[in-house]
Amino acid sequence: MNKHLVSTLPVIILAGLFTGSAISAENKEMPKEDVIDVPAIGEGLCVHNLFQSNMVLQRDKPVAVWGWAAPGEKVTVSFAGQTQTATADKDRAWKVMLTAMPANVQAQKMTVQGKDTTLTLDNILVGDVWVLGGQSNMECPLTDIENGALVPQVTIDGT
Image (cartoon, rainbow, N blue to C red; front, side, top):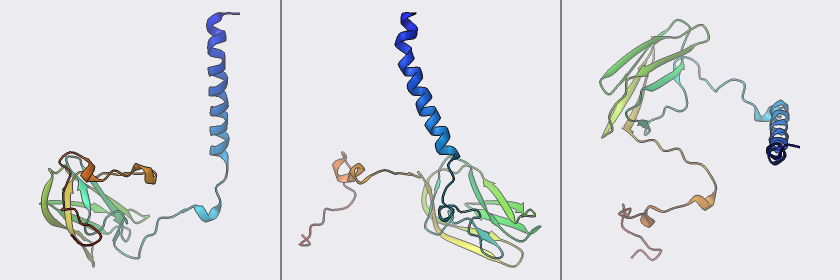
């Protein structure tokens, strides 16, 4: 038997086993209590739950803002000197794209205006958005990083 084939055969078999288990896991039906078929949307004009007051938008990248309104309703989003308009389609969905913005430390307001309703999101910054996930062993206090002390150390006794 070919030496190369003999040395790669275990890798091929393992790859086949893992691929097969991944396929069978994909075909497995999820319990219905864990499935959200429709996002939570309010009546009338609303934005996706990702958009809140006190949020940070990613700098130097276009920003999509979306939500729902009455079918055919014109929706205007204003933020950081930009104004974009969309029309809600028959399933109520609308989406606008804001152009890339530089980072800034000045809190700004986003307004989302429909026919009869105006939503206002306050205290929005543009900067770097970090999405972290993992386990508790991923903790790394900023004070452990060189020049990372952002606030004075506070002890239990207040000193």
